[in-house]
Amino acid sequence: MSTFDNRVALVTGAGSGIGKAMAVAFAEAGARIVVCDVDQGRAKQTASDLGEVAIAVGADIGDEAAVAALTEAAISAYGRIDVLCNNAGIMDTMALPADIRVEEWERVLRINLTGTFLVTHAVLPHLLRQGGGAIVNTASEAGIRGGAAGAAYTASKHGVVGLTRSVAWAYAKDGIRCNAILPGPTMTNIAANATFDPTGAARLSPVLALGERIAKPEQMAAAALFLASDAASFINGAIVPVDGGWSAG
Ligand SMILES: NC(=O)c1ccc[n+]([C@@H]2O[C@H](COP(=O)([O-])OP(=O)(O)OC[C@H]3O[C@@H](n4cnc5c(N)ncnc54)[C@H](O)[C@@H]3O)[C@@H](O)[C@H]2O)c1
Image (tube, rainbow, N blue to C red; front, side, top):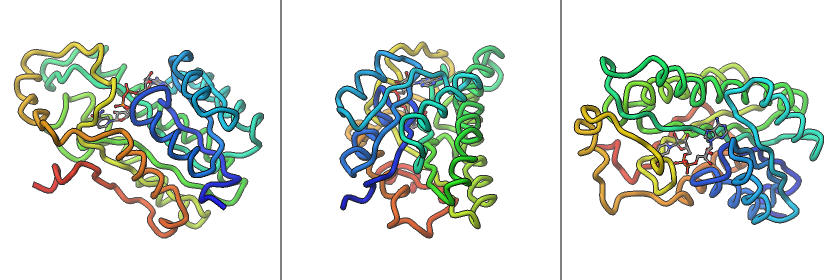
């Protein structure tokens, strides 16, 4: 028996980067996977890489109707959800609080925080009905520090940390655990099409110039796999840096 045999993991943002590595790690541990991504082509590619243990669902986590359809697709395919990895997220332009445009603030908060809430809100009734489950949120070092990203991303990831603690506290007696990982800089596609605010980027670039201390997505997936596993059965509400010691300094 593998650790996640007979379990179903729903991973958002699983078409790329950390989410894709999570989908692979959970599948290798025996789980069936619901691969969610706003980019349907990427979701299909990940699911096809995993083979018959996965389904692909194109959904924007910031869209309540799309999230309802996502949860329905998961239940209709597999009848249950045991693990939710709230991983999908976007960067901001690194704009500082005085410089950020309101549209950018609203877009980043909508996806990173409201999207994480919407999927959690839709999946929790299934975890409660089943008598338990595990949620792992991908926050960021910017969820506990003010100088690791722009204003919108920082506020959104602090919000994800707060939501993690709220869910952990609210449902501890129901067998539902909720933890967050705080990745340090990780080699993914997150900045592939990014444009940066010059003032914010100039202030933040020394933080990001970590050279060889850039992580691999698989290192984030390993932490999520542990937190979702029975080996972490008494870990609930933990906010776990996965950054090679960056936040320790
Ligand atoms: N890469 C890093 O350095 C780093 C550091 C800290 C935290 N994070 C967090 O890790 C998570 C994953 O990012 P990544 O680095 O793997 O980036 P990535 O861009 O490689 O992958 C993110 C995936 O999420 C998808 N996505 C974006 N918006 C979505 C939406 N509204 N609905 C559904 N899917 C959506 C994208 O299409 C993409 O496939 C994010 O929450 C990010 O904030 C990343």
